[in-house]
Image 1 (cartoon, rainbow, N blue to C red):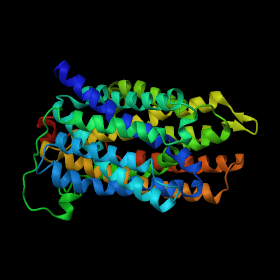
Image 2: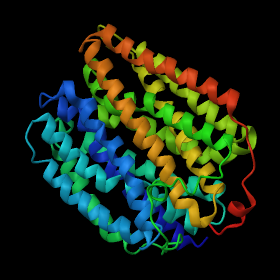
Image 3: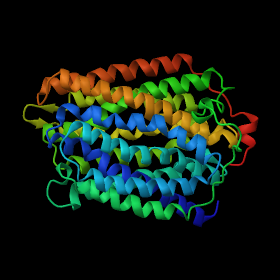
Image 4: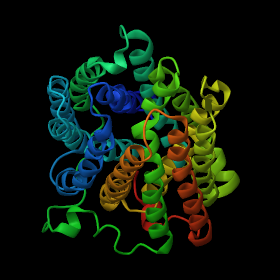
Length: 406
């Protein structure tokens, strides 16, 4: 792969996740300080609804009629404009939900599209994709550091992160038109609901695929607890600059992304996924015991945050790579969309609403509340890891998928 293409794809991933990290991480704290603390999880569930709708875009448009990079550019231009609008909305739960949903309807399809653009340009996905995807994590880190340490005042409690993300999203939308061409491959046959959802691409899949899909979806439930409430949790227990502190998890993510090819060789895809699922259980037990009435126990909090790299990379990135390798080029985008549908869509929708119910039901701003809050997803992640260990059977890529151009 040419160095120039690698650089362009790396910048793509950097911007893709900079936009998301800049506003979505501190957004819960922003909502809390606008009096919407009882609605945070419900508002965040907009991401699930948007991810469910994303395959309609990718399956019907990017795979069939237009190049993926062009669709991605248009969507990011819309997302940027909608982020500017979201920053000006009032403190109404229903209005904020609809505004958030609008932004995410534009943004969520671009996750699968950016993966498709990268995978289409690569020749060895297990070796090359982690080195490209790591720049997405770097983008998330830089966004968190800017929000937590560069923007003036307590930026996480204001609309400043929304304005930052809006500006970068528009710039990224323009840049997307210059990315390597990723033409439609699926043809322009009859469009049906199963086709739009990517079900036609996965109709011949075996048990291992469905075990992977099920467990990835279930792991989105404990992930949602972190994604929605980690920032308010850190703010509540007295951690300074929560958004910047949370980048410990993304720094860890960088390291484990680079190690991912080695772990594939050492323990295989099954071992990688099991380790990742178990890591979520361990980190939540740490969070539940990582503070006292006097404040955070910083070494434990930092350790829990650092385990994010193992949990995220070894579950969600590894699943993306596995799906990319087990489907032919004409079905790859739709298979990735189905994975995103079941994880960032169905799984996140369920998880964010469960997290909201647990947050409200156990009371707020009290130590026992946060202990219960984190121990529940810890147990759920442990059970899911065990189910995966017992049911998943590792297999090599199919001949058609392995032989297809990446």
